[in-house]
Amino acid sequence: MRTQIAIVGAGPAGLLLGALLHRAGIDNVVLEQRSAEYVLGRIRAGVLEQVAVDLLREAGIAERLDAQGLPHDGFEMAFGERRLRIDLHALTGRRVVVYGQTEVTRDLMDHRHQTGLGTVYEAEDVQPHGFDGGRPYLSYRHGGTGHRLDADFLIGCDGFHGVCRASVPPGALQTFEKIYPFGWLGLLAETPPVSPELIYGHTERGFTLASMRSHQRSRYYLQCSLDDTVAQWSDDAFWAELRRRLPAAAAAQLVTGPSIEKSIAPLRSFVAEPMRFGRLFLAGDAAHIVPPTGAKGLNLAASDVGLLARALAEFYGGSTAGIDHYSQRALARVWKAERFSWWFTSLMHRFPDTGGFGLRMQQAEFDYLCGSVAAQTVLAENYVGLPLG
Ligand code: FAD
Ligand code: DHB
Image 1: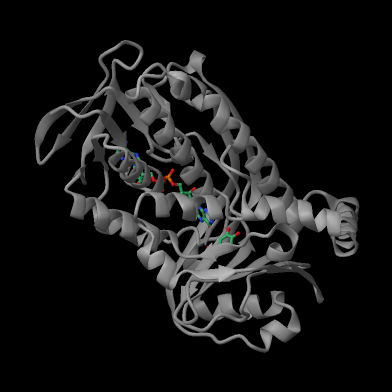
Image 2: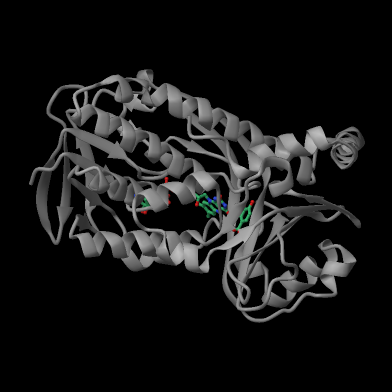
């Protein structure tokens, strides 16, 4: 089989890239190791920046997003009982949209199916080859037989544990990493959200986030120990702990119910440089991870593939400038999102080892935010997302 662009991974990065390339008349095939149902079963991000919304519109996949997505003009921060609303729209003229990663993925999958673009789910043992020369290809097994997919370029959209970054010679790659000493326990429930806007809370008992997927569906998170397991957390225990961490007025509005999903995610900052090796490009979680505070992961995946789709269209139009600058352009934006996610994580969580001084620094930072429109503007600008560049 031959295609122009061979994409590894059918997460949001791979599928959105495929859709943007298709719009530009560029043929592509996606290989995914899991089944479509498995990919749709992963509950992850929930907040889209304007850049991500614009790219979905550009790809012609925003009909359901425009109808069902919830535009949010602001969000709240709480330090115990002290609450601060960040008025995103007043501070930046922009807003974010609450629309789940699962829904984005479903829309992209449906579009791919309708446009007849090739997608191989349950592709086993995918391996990139020859990307340092002019004839790259992917080998894989499917349905018990071996296959080969030749392409002009290979794109690793295969997430943090994928095969593409792992196939690059170690000397060609520089990595930067920070592991946080806690995780997030997430719970999804068919209950109305506790508040019309998101609440990021810092409490003595640890961080909490009250989010949502719709007016009927809530998504909550609790900072938890890295030793915790989902089995240890009954629904009742989760709701009781959430109630303790929410500001009292919000806790009074809490509606509980059986969980639809519960999972624990570790928190990590990670960047691999560069994002291009000859004819192999990396995009999304394959190249970088942010801790989830501030919801940048999915949005960064979208902005990477926005830049990459534009660069590849330029390549087929006769210019290599876009692909030559992709890594540098993408990384400039990635590092700013890394900084913001690290800052927001550092402000909002309880750190087991920073003592009284660390806590006073967090309180002073929150105080400063409460009194400074300039500080709120910096936060809001980063939260709604920096321009694609
Ligand atoms: P992924 O979504 O990881 O997709 C990669 C795809 O590649 C997967 O489908 C995988 O099965 C496939 N793949 C991997 N290896 C291979 C292989 N060898 N061959 C073929 N296919 C392969 N972000 C937020 O903003 N907010 C959140 O609350 C949030 N929560 C998260 C919770 C968890 C548990 C995780 C893991 C991430 C979370 N994120 C969150 C981050 C966000 O979901 C990711 O940034 C986003 O999914 C990145 O998209 P991606 O397409 O780059 O990678
Ligand atoms: C969600 C996750 C985040 O990390 C965040 O900052 C906001 C919302 C969510 O899953 O809804």
